[in-house]
Every structure is written in structure tokens, then in C-alpha cells.
Length: 80
Image (tube, rainbow, N blue to C red; front, side, top):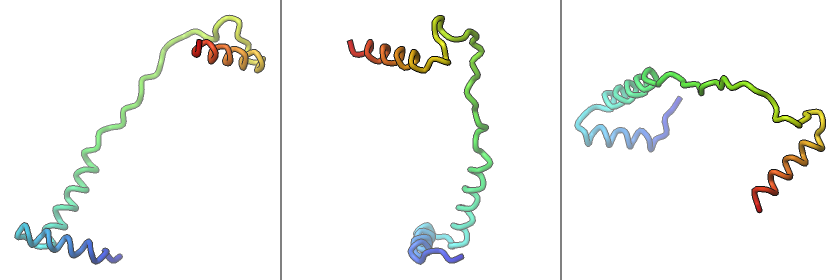
């Protein structure tokens, strides 16, 4: 795999500006990348609700027309 020439030129300039070798610059970059991967925090999962209950009284999940009507009424109520 070849690196883009402009990237190599920029790396050489940076190494020269810092008074170090290109190899040491690359080594530092690899250390940073590898250390960042090791320091990633553990995934935090959202808490799971322990709420109990069920449907609001009067709602029938098998009656889609009634559900749509309730949704429409709720939508209209927000704009009054």
C-alpha cells in the first residue's frame, strides 16, 4: 500500500520542523492510535424501564380506525 505523496511530504516537513526523524513521527502516530483504541470507555447502555401497566382504558389495538382517530384528535388538540 502506498501513501499519497502529499501526505508523505507533509509528514517529512513536520518531522523536520520538530527536528526529528520521519520514523519517530510515524512511531508516535502509531502509539497514539493504538492507545486511543485501548482507552475507549465501555459502552453505556440506557436504563431499562421497570414501569408496569398497559394500554390506556378504551384502546383496542385491533381497531386501527379507532387508533387513527385518537391520533388525529391528539394532533388537532395540539394546534388549538
